[in-house]
Amino acid sequence: MMTKSEELFRRGCKVIPGGVNSPVRAFGSVGGTPRMIASADGAYMTDEDGNVYLDFVGSWGPMILGHNHPEVREAVIRACEKGLSYGAATRREVEMAELICENIPNVDMVRMVNSGTEAVMSAIRAARGYTGRDKIVKFTGCYHGHSDALLVQAGSGVMTAGIPDSAGVPKGCTQDTLSAVYNDETSVQKLFDAFPNEIAAVIVEPVGANMGVVPPKEGFLQSLREMCTRYGAALIFDEVITGFRLSFAGAQGYFGVDADLVTYGKIIGGGMPVGAYGGRREIMECVSPLGPVYQAGTLSGNPVAMAAGIAQLTILKDHPEIYTELNQKGKWFFGEIKKILEETGRTAVANYCGSLGSIFFTDCPVVDYETAKTSDTARYADYFRYMMDAGIYLAPAQFEAMFLSAAHTSGELERVLELIGNYFQK
Ligand SMILES: *Cc1c(COP(=O)(O)O)cnc(C)c1O
Image 1 (cartoon, rainbow, N blue to C red):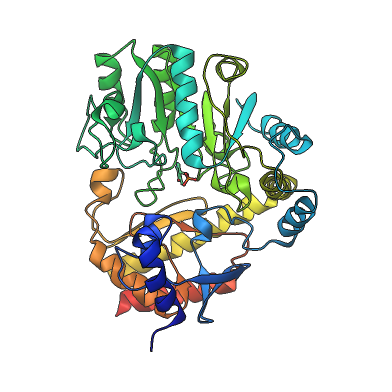
Image 2 (spheres, rainbow, N blue to C red):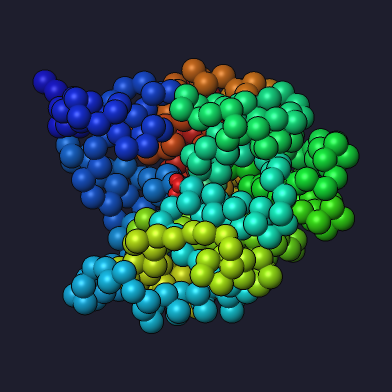
């Protein structure tokens, strides 16, 4: 007999490409049928068949307080009672912007959008408008959403003109996207040597989290800061994952490195579809209607989404101990995983930073996309299925992070460590 998930997925496949609204959800790289999630609360999700999972995806980051947090939920319900959208300026948008600008270094002004993709696309346009330059530098293996200019093929080294990585992206859209190697500042220097006056921005995930978790090497982010200052390019931290996660001030706060522009998504919406970009006043003043860089959004700053985001960010700001505990939990949990891998002598390595971590099924240290790619994805799929059968919901792909939340108790994490131990022993 088919499970309800299987039945729904079959129906979905007839009317939605691949049955999903975002590709990774299709379980393509791990096999099997995606579980149709019916509800979620705290650290757990329940599927349509009533199976309960301890969740380590957390909607890919937003659920840092756990699912269905009562204060966030209440804020949304109260907002709904006042109407769902006005297409006009509101008090909540001002309060949200103040919450960000008063607490995040280098963000003097911020614009709300509806997704991380939109945030990054708009930040790059602002950087190009401000500098009057066209080229941007991105790092192979970093993901910045699905806008045309950022869908470039992964090279094995420095590339001075991007080749589209998706059908439907014209060559012209990626020709100004240069690719550098993560954790290798000399690869960026080469691009600045080749185009000293043409690079508008360097965009980076301050902690690589879309090739599995790849933390920056000591001094890497600082050297990007220095190069951008020297060549007059904007440094963009894509903090769609790290923002409000590593610390309230994100990676800027965690590593003590200043960016010129920052992009947010995921956590900033408290589970609602929200993104934001912000930064230094001179750059943000280029954005329409103040300046010549056009950017707009019918539902941007939506009152219900703002209510969810403000509620979640306010809890995080008022309880700095959440970050201390979350980062301690990450250090202990991923540290124990490292011990298991060493003791069992399996060819796998663990990387982590704060509450983000990954196990790579390879024997070499993972420091960039090339080394991440040495992972055996079939072994990850086997591990994924083992954990899924034991009620643990991990990312259905090797090159993703495991997200810890404030809702994961040490008891639950101990149970997971025991399972991981058993898996690697077998
Ligand atoms: C998820 C993500 C994005 C894209 O955000 P969407 O809301 O999915 O459009 C951009 N950058 C990073 C670093 C991300 O992790």
